[in-house]
Amino acid sequence: MTGPYVLGIDFGTESVRVGVFDLTGQPVAFASQPYPLYHPHPGWAEQKPDEWWAAFVGATRAALAKSGVPKEEIVGLGADCTSCTVLALDENFQPLCPAIIWMDVRAADQARRIAASGHPALKYNGYGNVSAEWLPCKVLWLKENQPEIYRQARYVGEFIDWLTHRLTGEWVASINNTSIRWYYDRADGGWPASFYEQIGLGDLIAKFPGRVLDLGQVAGPLRAEVAAELGLPAGLPVAEGGADAFIAMIGLNVLQPGKMAFITGSSHLHLGQSAQPLHAKGVFGAYTDAVVPGQYTVEGGQVSTGSVVKWFKENFCGKEAALAAERGVEVYTLLNELAAPIPAGSEGLVVLDYWQGNRTPYIDPEARGIIRGLSLKHTTGHLFRAIIEGIAYGTEHILRTFRANGYVVEEMVAAGGPTKSELWMQIHADVSNVPISLTAVADGPALGSAILGAVAAGLYPDMQAAAARMVKVARRIEPDPARHAAYQFYVEQYINTYPPLQDLIHQTVRHSAAQPAG
Image 1 (cartoon, helix red, strand yellow):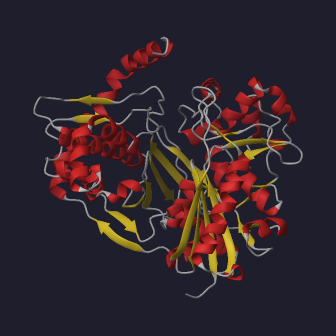
Image 2 (tube, helix red, strand yellow; image 1 turned 90 degrees about the vertical axis):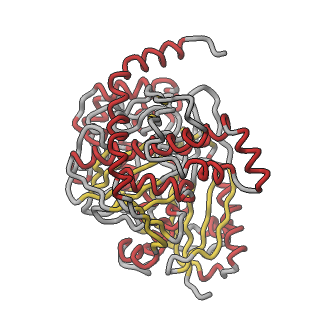
Image 3 (cartoon, rainbow, N blue to C red; image 1 turned 45 degrees about the vertical axis):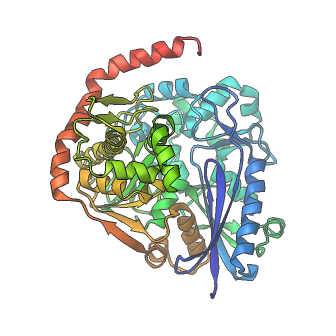
């Protein structure tokens, strides 16, 4: 084992994960520490920055101890954080209230009003609905509902901005977060001042960081007191980081047009690079310079994917859980076995994966899940397969929207928990007729952050060169032409199911929301 080494730091929704990597991308050690998530009101989600920091210190020290690497051989670090996690800070950079994290949707009314502005900056939303998760919506809610906190806030930014300042003392922003969620467009003059004026946040730009840095650019040296707390060398170059899923693109080497980072888990995210700007209804982006300077990043997403599979397993698979326990295997192993021999289309079942709304292409938070075609013949295996197929149809709906607007995906590079299921990945490949590659290091965000750390340390000239060396493909799943042909009928059924039912579903959702909680 020879150095030098870099740290890749991944701040997720529930924990921070720290990895020590060599310069070939080989992980030497990982450690993680959890932090709490608070829900003080329905639709709210908050965290405390001091708890982030305590977990980070513990995970960093644990990873270093586990690796056995002398601290002097750590030469750079990079980090990613959850996106749309907003902080209001006083003149001493102390939080004035808990961080409002990405999943918080208290700003739904503000989002509707911002969408109604019709400002050209909304091209990044595909000229459609605006997500209540995005920073301007949350800050407008803060200004309208907690005006004293907003008035006292000398600085407003996101998780990554707070972390970078804590590490280096520099108040800088990432081109990644600012373009993907703050409507910053470097090619169009940077901050859209008229947009912020129109939505009632004309004074917000003065609270933002003054400098916007590219990914991998040196944000500053690691402060001596922080280095001592973490057990790292003082002066270590700290790379500018960004949003976790977008940094995963680097860790999957999706840095050129034609490939798509397929980030799977409780939800699915679809991220690709385009050589040309692309702004269209049903597509998020394309964001200027968000990952690679001179390119544009296209985004699609499904809100409920792995979470629906988990919901089904936990609520409807008691018999299967008992059988799995008798065999000493995971419940998912048994469910995959039951689903595998069932033909494409699950003998007439169609599932819409909108359990918690639709992110793209409809951007509809009031969409809800549908299961149709049930008969007495259908079994647990049928339903399990149909849910996975429905998720794959949702991905294909997004890819069709991309294609219709000039962005063609030739390869998906996948990461996340669902990649452990060969059946699930094969269904995705078959439905979309696109091969899926799996990398040797499945932890795309941590590796992507480590790659940024290596670039900041001057060990590679840019992230493309670093990713070419540090990311390795482990295997490739090819689509089956016959199954692809069989799936086309069901994809059409999926796409055609929601539009005629949309108004009815909205009425039911609103009626249910008005009823007393049971």
